[in-house]
Length: 115
Length: 111
Image (cartoon, rainbow over the protein chains, first blue to last red):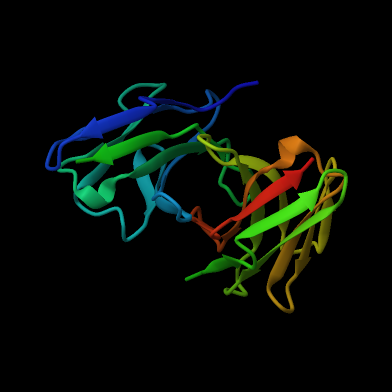
């Protein structure tokens, strides 16, 4: 069964450093998403991406964040200058169509720890 | 906006019994709801969804009920098994692509 994959599974970085989290969505999916989950808290939407541009973003997704689809398979989330409060699990998701007609499938997540 | 909350942070059920996990949402314009299961160290896994034009939907051992009048939905798991132990989230969508998640209920199946 096709699945969303994410790398790395764990990332430790120093505050102020840049990190890039990588995702390979399911191959025939057209909509891509990033969510984060701070330890013990709910999953929070960050951004959705379609047709090579951001289609929706939350207030969490400020200028420190960016997303890119550099090739036909990868979808990345970059955090330019990490802060302690960026420590969280980051989940990538993809869907074949808009979520109102098709559900999103989540990857296993990248656990980011900012020291 | 939308806020979604679950009624109980934890729930313990005897193996073989049925379990019910409840969720409330705030925005009456929410038109699509999903239940996710999250096992330790893994991403949310789709269980079942329901659109606002329905009040009940059944899957394999799971049933979702939607009561739009009181903005409440529930997930029923029949004949629970040890593998059902996980955190369960409901999520709501209000026209668009942003899913709003609840805080989660940790379901523990007691052997």
